[in-house]
Amino acid sequence: MRKVIVVVGPTGVGKTEYAISIANRFNGEIVSCDSMQLYKYMDIGSAKPDSNELAQARHHLVDVIDPREDFSVVKYNKMAKDAIEDIFSRAKIPVIAGGTGLYLNSLIYDMDFGVQGNNSVFRQKMTALAEEKGAQYVHELLKKKDPEAAERLHPNNLKRVIRALEACENGGSIRDFGNVSKKTADYDVIMIGLTRDRAGLYDRINKRVDLMVSAGLIDEVRSLMNMGLTSDDTAMKGIGYKEIIDYFDGKYSLEEAINTVKKNTRHYAKRQMTWFRRYKELKWFDIDLYPDKTMALDDISSWIESKMRESDFSGNQ
Image (cartoon, rainbow, N blue to C red; front, side, top):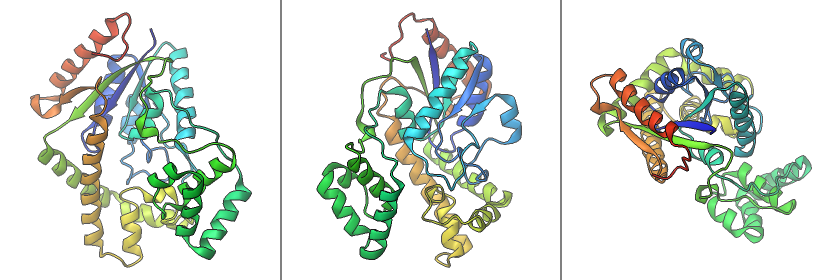
């Protein structure tokens, strides 16, 4: 049977170190499921695995996309599925690790992406229309053509609104990928969820943000802006980047920007937990209940091994 191990949890919980250890125990390679770690030049704010961590296990889909490039869950799905098949072809086990719920859904469920547009002329036309008449006007056009998509997308999220209109132009629509339920038949999925005490997790998040600032987050954002990236680019909307841009734009003091990064990261961790709790087949492990990492890994590994032995694991417990 083709087995895929999935390691998820909120930001700051320790997914990277545990995924590496699990990959090493089960002859695996890691496929990143993080929407920010894909991007080149964005190392600090994305909490990308460092050189030491990358050397401990082979990683896929880390540091592969230019942040100026248009990217979507459709492209992620294609790249991740290719990586998974490559890992299988070498008799190894894919270990999917990350916290981007929509990307994860695309790998564990059969998702109909609809008719995908690639009409640059149409996009330019809609962008010009938004500049002339405002983003709300373009959103109203979407409301007429695809009310469901318009309901999900905020008018200020102009790129996605235009992408949805483009899909309509090509005879398709942008699906609500958060509500799919048919599991993929490509492989069996063994899902591990890592969690910690909330107060402890929030403390880890706050300290990690301080470490990012000490490691050069401000200079990293300045460098990206010098490359021509702005708050309008999807990559720069990530937590840790948009707040520092606001600092450079004079909206925050540096202290306010850093505190906002911490607050937004904590809120994001809470949203992630809400998303992951929808996976009934996910086995949770509270890291704080173990005296050390080795004992936690032993427990996690025993559970994975029990699922590996099942001849027809379907994700149902």
